[in-house]
Length: 452
Image (cartoon, rainbow, N blue to C red; front, top):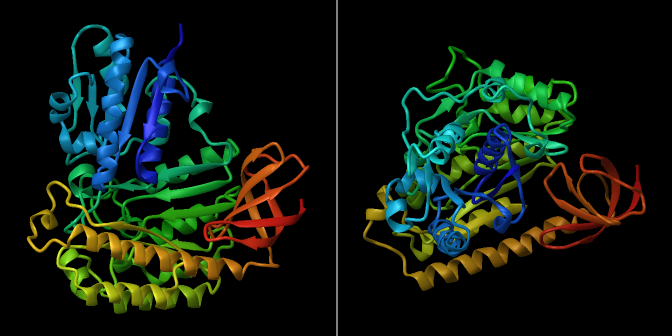
């Protein structure tokens, strides 16, 4: 009988890519992915610990899975990702019904861990080492490990994430990434290009290059002896025939080069959207965060980006209520929002994370104050996003179809705006369509007058 796996992904695009890898590995050992955890023989939670709320969701779901395992004794439960890396053996103590704990660098060991568990060699499996000599396996090697072809369930019909590096060397005072994903390691250029070519040959049209800080690609702990910058890599990928859209995330402002900015001017298939985390508009807060740039440098980078690509959409991440943040500091964040007028942002209240410097800071901001500041920021951001979106009214833009339900189509612009329209024409994900925008909301656009 076929074995069924349910994978629940928490957090960022890096985790989404890791879940794809897990799905590929398990498909090669006979697992079929299902969309309902109650139909699964194996449930994997691929976790995020960037914020306390994300971690709380993981343990809440693990509590529910305890009841499922009582009814289904043969069910195996695995915790992967950053919470697994962070908590290790503590997960077994808190949740004794968990069978496997596997860290961020060890997901490639999952098939062997499952084999030992099912064969009775062990009662539990844990692998959470962060290896100094860790290398990201080449895509071909990953597939060859089990002597089979890449399974279709893990491959999107038209877009794919490609990991170019892992880990981070910045050690921001609030961030768990260096502890949960290790130090920066860049994949060899040839491995990345080979993977992109393989994906394009299989019909993938949109590629997103992933890393904790893609701007520092090739600078430290490079797997191969190479001098290629991220801008150089981006140009190589952009030149691959069949790459219709190219995106990347995430970027640190301190490492943003003029060469990289110029790529938006030189390559039409590089999407005019840049996610550039600011985290705060206050120099005092940025210094305490150990962010190695000032608001002045951030604004200088934004102005340069806009000079190379006037139509570029800029989004950001923002933390409010960082320890020691005063009313004046928060006002500087609001001023940054007014100056840049971000097209969108991901904003959060600060929360202490284990093994970070800021967790030990003693001048924490009151929870109610943090909540009020977050509400203020998000309210103004929504207003600005709506004002930005209204500028699309009456314009004809090219969108790539993402999802189709009967005659309702969801698509996305190169600037990363979601567009909804209806059509009697049968579209499939990956099709590009010219549409005219007729309505603008805070978070999406509506269109009509479709032409193929």
